[in-house]
Length: 507
Image (spheres, rainbow, N blue to C red):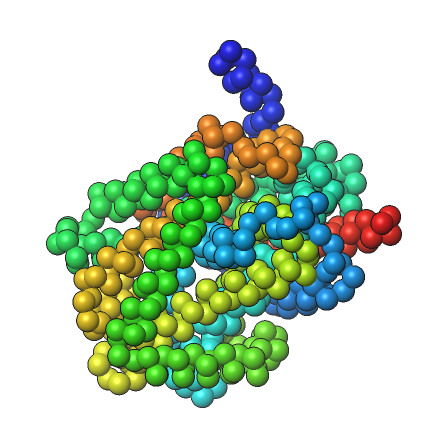
């Protein structure tokens, strides 16, 4: 009986979509490790070309995604209901926490604590008016509406495809069918899906490199452990254990883990806000930053620095837009799936509301607390980073200014692990769906396939920690892969409008 079930499962799997991207990433890793400098230089040239010479492509995509999302919400398409349920499948709280915690990973805590300082004395920030006004504003800008718009426009398209049209292929290529027609069943569809999975694997393989050093440093500080590769691997295995365990609980496991993650996140923010003694400064700087962002959003979103006076846009904004697109391969599918029973308008506005609320709270509270220590002169965070100090150690210095610093670090570690686990739990759900030739919208992938991807997601980071160059190079691959992903995003959005238009005509 078991053999028959296994055989039936194998027949349903699209093995090429599973095997080819894995082989591609393994070969890339091998090249990066054997020829680190040569590969880094080649990728650097390509990445520089995409950021410096054709960076306007990424900027226009970002602005276009925001405009498209608003049009989806407030046009005739906004009334379309994603599925035939009387009420949404998940409560607003569960839905919102799953959206926020499954899309941002632990990176948001890492960058919330340090990104303002990375801008610090940047010539562009100085020229505009200084660190106090513009460093916190740019953190909200880079993690704000444009970032979420990439996810939201695709989430609507995927939700419509799965819940309204009832398509049984949960893949990028299938979302292009209204435009490409039967071509998605041939080589074009195969290329689209392989590009998507490769971009996803490259992006997820490197995301651990950002925040894992902070996790390691925090654990060493609290428990007196010795930093090193062994500890980093142990942390990665701990994260993998948590999200692999939740795999066996399906969407209920994702929902429960997301709620736990959200509560831990709120506890951390509340403690820093109230216990840090900088409540007034944090709130006032946050309100000022939001106002500054709203007032200057169009100019910030379209500024290209054509004379290359500072290259701030190329180094930061374009980097972020490309990275969000690379991550947009997976998270929109998840958002679309959990939005069953909601209208397009509710999905768009709700996702913006939940996503931006969580993101802005993180940067306002954690970021502005660190900024307050810089402004007061308690710490020279910017100066230390400019003198070559590593980011995790500087973050620990900032957190050590809080009362009960060890307690804060413990909460931070647990919250980061929860964020990672929730995100990768959702990603295993999505990429496992990619592995099927056909999969109904209300059907979850087999637990064995999700476990396979859960293991794969952690093996690459473990392999890559032995070579810093390979991490950097693979991140460049994810950013470069965002170029064709951007073209595919345009096809998917155009396909949605065509298909949704026909759907409304037929009603």
